[in-house]
Image 1 (tube, rainbow, N blue to C red):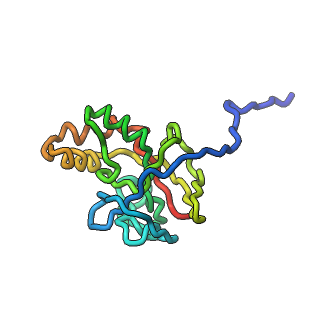
Image 2: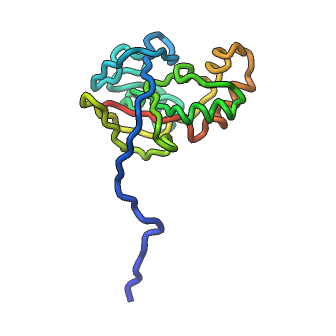
Image 3: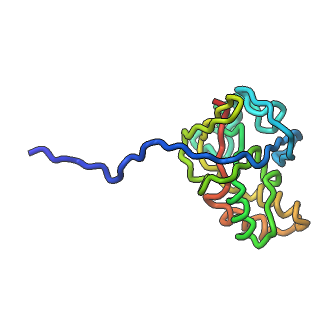
Length: 179
């Protein structure tokens, strides 16, 4: 007799969510730290003139399956953060706020509950015709934590820098590229 195999979990159909762009930022220097701008000029290479622009990039520590320095698709063209999740990170760190620019954000959205949990391949549509494709959650790292410590006037506070990693877990936002 044939055995019937049932899936462990049902597949959820796609759904539409609405949010609002609260802030746009660009990292125009030689660092990932970004600053507010009036608008972003996007191409298939990402944000024109941004630190993370480019159709490709070199692999690093986040891609252990490649030899470090291997040229690969740039799925990190944009860092998308949530206003609500930034507030939760600040609360976890005992700070009055965490600015999106301190951790290299490019887009800050509001009104999407648990935004960082949006699945890979989610499409984000914007007025004007731009579509972004989500790659995955952005993992919190000590470099962003060190940037926060510098911006709050505690540049030598290694404990604060390291505390960012657990404080921002599953709240660090999403990485995306121009679709």
